[in-house]
Image 1 (cartoon, protein in one colour):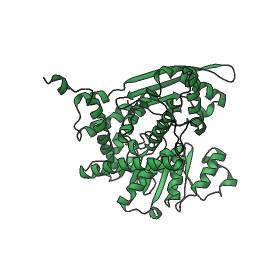
Image 2 (tube, protein in one colour):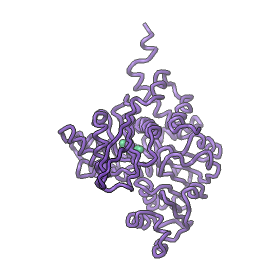
Image 3 (cartoon, helix red, strand yellow):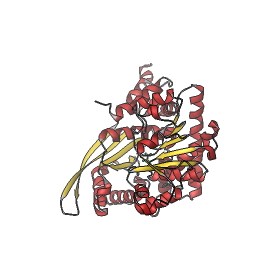
Image 4 (spheres, protein in one colour):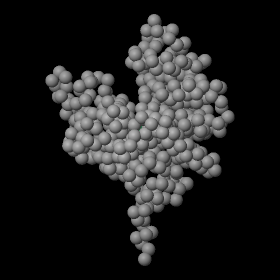
Amino acid sequence: MSKSLFADASQRLEQAMKYVAISEDALEHLKHPKISLSVSIPVRMDNGSLRIFQGYRVRYDDTRGPGKGGVRYHPNVTLDEVQSLAFWMTFKCAVLNLPFGGAKGGVTVNPKELSKLELERLTRGYIDAIADFIGPDVDIPAPDVYTNPMIVGWMMDQYSIIRRQLTPAVVTGKPITLGGSLGRDTATAMGAFFVIEAMMPKFDMPPQETSVAVQGFGNAGAHIAELLSKAGYKVVAVSDSQGGVYCKKGLDIPRIRQFKESQKGIKALYCEDSVCKVVEHEVITNEQLLTLDVDVLIPAALENQITEANAKEIKAKIIFEVANGPITSGADKILEEKGIYVFPDILVNAGGVTVSYFEWVQNRSGLYWTLQEVNQRLKQKMVEETEPIWQMSQELAISMRTAAYVHALNRLGEAINAKGTRDYYLSK
Ligand code: GLU
């Protein structure tokens, strides 16, 4: 049987342990999710039938603050996946020094098969089921794969109905008019862009001569492709869950975005003759995209994309993980041997949760920031945490991933130890 996603995710702790003086107690603490909730959500469907959906919320750790993390709607959601995502959130928040622990939620559903009303009833049902488990000082959900501001707005509304009190700070990623933050929609991509902008000069690869492939064309993937193409990078390939397109000279990303929005998929680009001329391209699969001969590869879709099965075929020189967990620990080793630099998810995609933190702060203070303020603070935070991780990876000759875990473990260990260590209780 293949290793569970969570077992693979926690493998990263073992590697980082060698470089960090963390107490045994703290480590033991971090190996286990604090609370895992599994719920059944009854939903009345439009045709009158009743369907029960499976939902989860896992609070992995809340030593450094309330749990924080998105809610995913996807047919492949399992408790194992939600636990792994909650684990990554714990380290992500510590890497960025946000006053949050890590959490995650999910519902096993294909939202594309539901009507808008069914989706709303499912979302309200999910919040009914987990309401005692979340709160502005307890655990704060947000969007993730296939959830969006509208869905998060329903979450906030339902929680407020239950509490009989308007509670905007219970979720982040809300529509602006319901207390959302400016810049939250583009924050994941923007944060990744700031990391890329800070790191690329170290490799002496000027944008105009750097080719990029982006896997995934959701909120994160589409925005990062556009930001990079505007900054002069040659974005030669993009894909969504249906497949992708490639053009050696570089793709016209804004037009592809427009197209995807109007036609609901990149596939339409190559499936309908009349629009084949919109941008020059070749059709590729998602698997082909990953192994293209490009300088920079950006997995921005789902976990487990680069595994021991295809890691040997990867030709990119640098990988920025915009998705959560796109590379398995086994694949990490192969990529390292090949000399490929991997900038890890818990740093690269942390822009989303960082602006979620800004949103939570704005909700609680009642003072709202301009887009420029949000982006300036985001840039400062991303660069401030990226540099020491780079320095550590250079000094200790370790991967950026291990360095990021060490950086986070130092903060988490310190917080856990502040509540008392073995040495403290045993000393007279
Ligand atoms: N779902 C996003 C992530 O994986 C954002 C989480 C949040 O904003 O709380 O980082």
